[in-house]
Image (cartoon, helix red, strand yellow):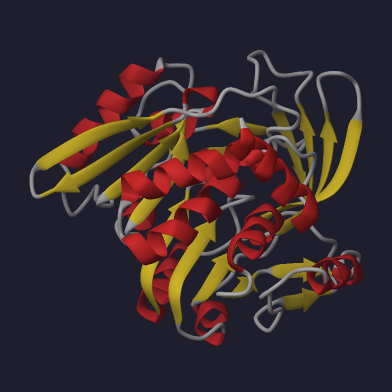
Length: 316
């Protein structure tokens, strides 16, 4: 199976709440690492992204240790690679973080997606918010049997100092009209629905359900909307005709080591299972377990570290 992964590989500097700092590849590196560990023998995983000259050798060395990953559709640039500083100690709520972005990438265009070739699944993960132009989603749709979108930083604006903040936008329909499945966390879903990012989970789920039921050509939503809720698991919203069902999937209870990239790992686990089952609820259960395992490892996990974490989780 050929899976294209669209987004940005960033250089992460993670300030943990205990005072430790982890430097790691981040962004779609989390997605690619987990997809490779789960199905690198079965898949051809093709990142579609721009990588700066200061990061090229690191990315090439990293991919050399992965199964099934091809750099054939990467664009190597002379620009500095995007960097993100994540600070959990500054965040007001447990599990939340303050993000600062430097060197946002030039958006991928339809031609970049076309160059990646046809695929069974396209997984688009909006790491920086400027990863691709909305028109590129249509190119991915035309070249792929299924399309999965992780909203992520589409819900963010960026201040002059690089700090990210949630903000409303009026062009959600350009992003949500095309994918078969969309992933967002609670705050991102609230932003899409015109609520406050601080609104309670049940309020956000109800608003998302209403939006799906009332979908119009000007405010389309996908058939499957996945709301990742951290330790509370995932809410799976599915639309069939005019009915929208909500299924809650619980997450394993663990002592989290590093939540960075857990949402990216969820998307990888979901897509790997969804590709063969076409069952969103079953895929969400798998994705939730995969995300939990990834949260037991700091930074983008190596194949060995991720598989050890998953095996440990499966023993409990």
